Length: 439
Image (cartoon, rainbow, N blue to C red):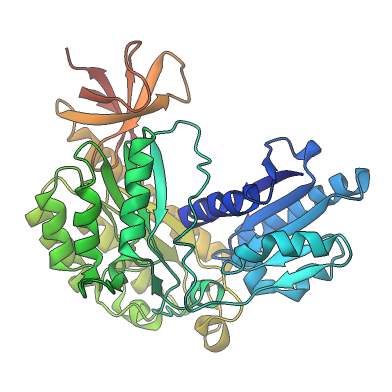
């Protein structure tokens, strides 16, 4: 039986796909990247934004063509969209399997039964972390690996569907995380990213020693696996990232100097409506503290334009915060209402589409300018880069990231993916440092 999976959404979904491949490989399924030869087609889905779901609805139609040509082919929707839409996905008649993020262990059984009738399991768990499963890595360069350290979220921000699709927070056994980091390093990987909806909420108690392991302690444990293994993490909620985490980052050179710190809005009124539990000034002060401890730390963010009742004054507050902070980069989106969230139940989506688009474009324009200013300040500096592989635009160039997560491109015919290279920045765009290899 051949298995084909398409993955949408966040890094957690990429890691979940690797878990699914591992579970089904143990049952004899063979991974394929050719959908036309697949016996089972799965889409691992995202529900965070409406456009992500619309893309998947479009793909379901394409999957149906494969099923029409070969009626025995099974089509499944797994992940967050499966959890959110549940039985509605089966009603189309184009889907045979619907499985939520906590039910992947049951996929072999669901697939077997689906040959007779459609199957669904969207049970959310308070314990499942897949800690005992060694993921089948799906990356192509063998350099960077994702390691899930916790699942779920307890913050219940008013716009966010994640608590409803991924359940409550539960942290994975720290010893299993360290074992996985050791395993990927032994296989040649040179970077791991620790994943969670809010990694700063990580808490685990060792039943043997009684030690309480928080996220700062876990970072230290993984950093000690090997000094040649870079350690990244995502994502942090601003109100939860601790001084201890920041000091731990500063203490270990192989913990990357980059924090993704989603702000979502620069307006205190909108932040309160979003249930973000901080003010714009508090957020700015937090960034300043990070930079005082780690001066070269890259700070990136997420922002939503046009949230419920957002005024021009609220929008200007966001622009002002972006100007003040000077983010290295940002993921910028206009608000799309997600069914079942607090906002969908209680707040009218009352900012018109044209206004949302204009405000988003203004944020993008400002951020592009700030990114270019930021990158220009790096011209003449030297960075250590972990090579990821050939550049997208030229096979004669290599690309890789600095510790603070800036992409570098440089001509090089000597090094290969997984090597550390010292480069000097000679020019830049708003998203890339153009470099030369240091002799």
